[in-house]
Image 1 (tube, rainbow over the protein chains, first blue to last red):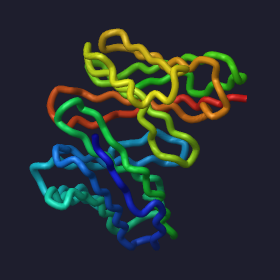
Image 2 (tube, each protein chain N blue to C red):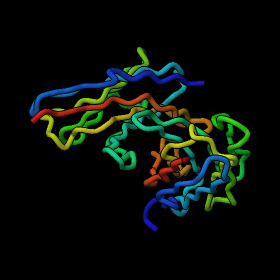
Image 3 (tube, chains in turn red, blue):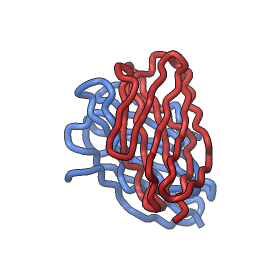
Image 4 (cartoon, rainbow over the protein chains, first blue to last red):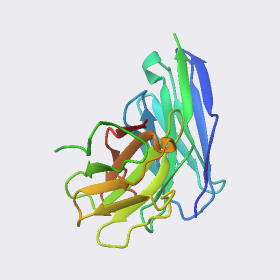
Length: 112
Length: 115
């Protein structure tokens, strides 16, 4: 199978600072890594994803990096804003079966 | 519709009753997933359907839980003889299998409360 670990479980940052959330995975066959943001009482929403053929992807204030050798990937949020406060989940997926394995989530609080 | 639709949005029932939750995936999505999310917790995988293949039921917590899907359309998750520990939000997601690495799209979930 696959085991995805996510750290930290909670993170507080001052508005304008950066936030970094890290995930590790165990199965080297995993090749797709999405990140989801879940606001309180709402559905998880895809915010960014990366495939194993690239090492970094950026979308405005959000970036994801992937280190296939070390089997870890990270979410970077720059210039954080209060509306970034939410729970963030990482996930890993393998090319066979299309099963997704989720991390346990990081509760991010951006302090105004 | 444009997104994954789940019904009901909320369900309150007495312990011991059976409940049925419904999920309408995005049209054309061959993969459908059910997750359970307890308050303040992560996503607990329950079951996964992929086209006409046998479903992956490895996440179902007990034989009180079952799910069906007709072809590539609606899925129903049934919980029999509900217990208080079944109280949670049940999320459905679907994804396309048109290529490798397709993201999941989630519904708003069904909030189940067992009295």
